[in-house]
Every structure is written in C-alpha cells, then in structure tokens.
Image (tube, rainbow, N blue to C red; front, side, top):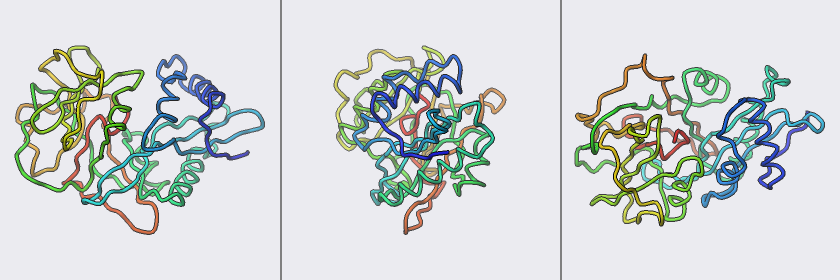
Length: 282
C-alpha cells in the first residue's frame, strides 16, 4: 500500500468522485464542482489529507479543510475533519485511522493548532479511542420561530470560527446548497436549505461589520427555522426554540476536538459558539 498526500487537480478530483460513488452508491453530493469548491477554492487554504493506493487503485481517502478560529480569544489555524472514504474492497484494514494520523502529523508540521469535527453516534467512539479526540459537547438541534433571542452578555467564546469577506463568500457559495444572508443590527442572519423548504437551517453570525456576500442576499424566509449548533451557556436562552426529541433525530451530532502541535489547546464546553456554517451539514 502506497500513502500519498492528496492532490487537488482536476484528474485527482475526478478520482475522488469515483471513490465516493463506489462507497456511497447513488449519492449526488460529491460532484466535481462541489469537491473542487471544497478542496481548492477555500480562501483559508487548500485541503489537507492523504490517500492510500494499491497499484493504480485508490483504496482510501481522508481530507480536512483549513479554517481560522479563535480559541479563548487567540487566533488559531485549525482543520475541519470532513471526507473519508474507503473502497469496499479495502475496508476493515485500518486505512482510515492511518490516513487520519498521517494528516494530523502533517498538519502539525505546517503549524495547524488543532482539528475539529462533527461526528455522529457511530463514528464518535472511534475518533475518541483511536485518534485522540475529546468530546466537547453534543450539538443543540432545535426548531423555533424567529431569532434566537440570546442574552445580551459579553462572553469570550472558548471556540468561535472567524470569517473574512472572502471566506464567508466562499462558504455561502456551496454549489450544492447556497447560503443566504440578511443584515441585522448586530451582524448577519444566515439561512440554508435543510430537510424541508419551509424549514431553513438558521444561524446568527456576529460579523464585526462584514457585509452580506455579493449575490447572497436572502429574500423572504420562513419564520420557522432549524437551529443546529451551540451558544455559550450564559448567553443561550432558546425560549422560542424547542429541542428536537432524540428519537426524531437521524443521529445525535457531537462536536469533537483534538489539539495539534506543541501547545495543548482545550475547549470549554460551556463557552462554544458554533453553527451550521462551521461544518458541512448544509
């Protein structure tokens, strides 16, 4: 088995799309346009990851994408753990774990301070036991009406994604699901298609003056909304949003984190600012 860093040229992206089709038959998510957008167009940097090859056969693939965050007020370059795929002929050989560890070692050498992800109930134990992640906190999954009505308290989040004009425009331009925005007094209100057209995914982004990305202005949107994320405990109220019962969720989603590099970083689960914008749900 030969292990190589991922590539982001058109030929490699076509091979990745072929692997995704072999692993997830019938999926319409992994088009060349989407994978190119995700891997190559991110203003925070190109994707980082490794492939496993058996001769001319792509056996497995693992990739993370760079992101800029603040951890306890300090800017940190991190990775978002995303796509993993192992060809059916090569499953059960521990390739994902090996590719992931190679990715994290390479990322640490490049100066990334950590890697975060959102894992479901099935994948969370593997990330914790085999790859050294910690479980930060399960995400809130709620349905409500209007804004979040958070308490007006100045709290420094332990974890918060930071956006530039370019990175926010890139995130909104997801070719599979455009994100729309409305300007508000304290930032932006963000909307994306979710499981139903009348139930958009919703996030509130305190932007510090960032404008609505060009061409991404939201028109009329449903007042009933899906919130998937976290707010610092001292700010969160959720009085107009009800929690979705566990039995009605496809799977609980967990925020996980692993520190990389010489300085150990830890997240305070009571002070997390996180939304659907910060991972690939919508």
